[in-house]
Image 1 (cartoon, one colour):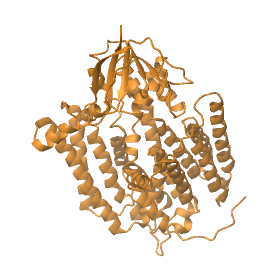
Image 2 (tube, helix red, strand yellow):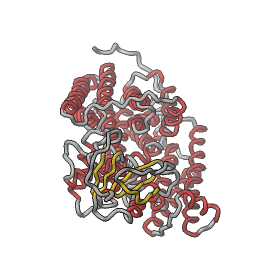
Image 3 (cartoon, one colour):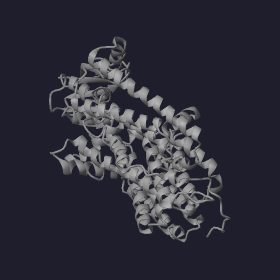
Length: 564
């Protein structure tokens, strides 16, 4: 079914050649490096999903579990398919023993983050090259050249994605959601590249939806296939309409693959629908998670409202709505909302050609004030932790993680100082001169996010490791559990089981939560309790010790030894 010819619509974009001045490639690469590399090196796997996913990967690499059913101590993953664990496990196996397993697992996921950034740029570039997305020709000439215009808009989309708060931590974890995000971004790219690069688009749509089906998100893959079919059907481009069979075929294969995996007893279709959605929580999540892309995307939809059915608006809009709907269906799940961030960044980029000067200035000054204060606070607390002054700040920092010992490192200090100097230079450049480039209003938000992330991952990394890693807790627990012994931990989450194996060197025997405990030959029993719960006596076991994470209101670890 072909769409009826539509009357031409007037683009709201008025863009001169001066406004599409190219962002230097070295600067763009520096933004990406400052965003991707911190968090990759020098840290432990963090609670909860990060270390849990790593545990399944490590178990595969060690040969402790089947590659068809990853598990830690007999406890299966709650979702995420099998592909993410294969990816991390294969990387650990290939790089062992030269690279630490946690870093080895993180490397392919860092590559996925780079791929997501690149796909977002190219998706925007191809969409901005379409006829409907082009700016209005000026009466006396001087309008932007199509290629230069598309490149400037794509630069803005990449900066918008880097500035998105929701991607910051989740994008640096070794979790299935990053692979799901890769699949959905590949799908968006396929819709964008269907006309200029049909062969690449076909590979991208098949690969993207299959990745989602193997990563625990087959339902969203099928929904995206249906939405992509709508875009292809209503397109005025013959090349895009020819893409329809590939979109529907990829969605069908993804659904069939998930069904086959489910039939085999593997991780295929997983339903995580929740009826506990609260409107206030959902609104709060969406607002902070999608900042600053959502307001700019809304501005795009208003100014381009007469072109909502054109591909440069319809494709990212429908993919973003699929991610939002998935998140809401799962009770405002932030990890499901990740899929909405790249398409929102694409939509936000199309607001740049029509962004009023006053609004752009407001974004600049908000970014300067907010991120400078944030960086200043990070530095102030860092100085207080190492010098004890200001006294009040040092005391407040000590309350956050009692017993924390500040560790000085030049390796952390030098890049932190360099990043701060570059931020001040960027602020001076942006506020001291009038730039006409389209991407100018997103330079400071992206730079501020990259700066604060780098400072967190250098100056505060030992503090964050102590607060969010099991390493120090299990060093204390080791005084009560003989080295290399078997630990029975019924109901313990995979994160704790992995910590016992990875940091403690113990053999673990777990029982999934909700199942009845069973007899065990392990001499040690470990029970995880809430922050203020009381340990109780257990028949056949003697209570040996009780430990808690030093951070406030965290879990307790109670150790029992089998009675003689």
